[in-house]
Amino acid sequence: MKELRQQLQIALDDLNEAAQLGEGDLLVVGTSTSEVIGEKIGSGGSEEVADALFAEFKAFEEKTGAFTAFQGCEHINRALVLPRQAARQRGYDEVSVIPHTKAGGSMCTHAYHHGKDMMVVENVRAEAGIDIGDTLIGMHLKPVAVPVRSTVKTIGDAHVTMARTRPKLIGGVRATYA
Image (cartoon, helix red, strand yellow):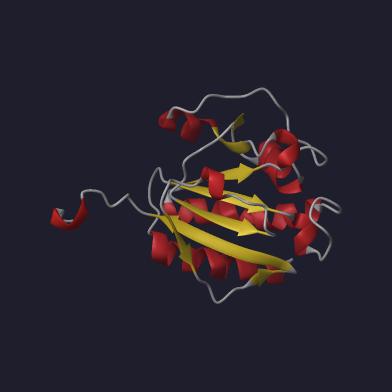
């Protein structure tokens, strides 16, 4: 578990170097704990892995001031668990579902039960995201996602993909951009 936490910490540091997340920003997280332990996605979730990774995500929140939204699996339509404070600040509506390991997945379920005042929402528009195990988080990122490369390519056996977002460039050749 220590190695998994170290891998995640490095990946999150690489992501934050590119994304520069701060107070009130949102990081969307998709995690297949099955993939982390070398199993097929959705087949062998691990509470132990979820606990180890959750601790690292909480440390990241404390360091950056950003909130974390944990995406559930397809059985809850990829709904997300996040702090009620974040959902209210961003105007997200609560949905009625309680994630569990067979409908939500181990990571989402762990976040729901161990986070502080958590709730579930149908979708978000996050400033950055990390996908551990090819869980497909793109639907929860703001419209212009930019890939972020890390020295960490896997967490455990799970493939890692990360992105930050940027504002749309509009206006054409006469426009000036910040």
